[in-house]
Length: 178
Image (tube, rainbow, N blue to C red):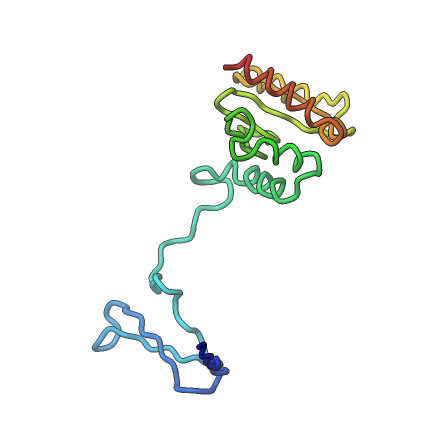
């Protein structure tokens, strides 16, 4: 037999007992505690004190903040993949393809690779028609080659209409790079 219990609603602002939060601050009052009411500030978030650390460094300063914008853009690209990228990713993810580990939308230096297998030093680019004859793409490919990567490019329509052919080409590339 199953018993159900009616949920108790949380009190609205101003109802119920007055709530106070204590925060330990050195040298304030006989007990060193300060009380806050619900009317104004509630004090610091849990685990933080009123005497917190100084703010983080300004943009462009500090460790790794130079690539923060590229990492942010890579996350956005992962969230909105094209249909061709999604179809190819489904074939490559979870070591499904020949046991190789692939990652998607990976920042490498100042570039973002669509798919990369670091073990085989292979980068896969899935491009639309806007990349036909792009000088920037050739320059990026030269940079990847100078850093030990092999870039293989496929058109979106090629991935969507002939995934088996694309996977055959990738298999040959991976065997060559072993």
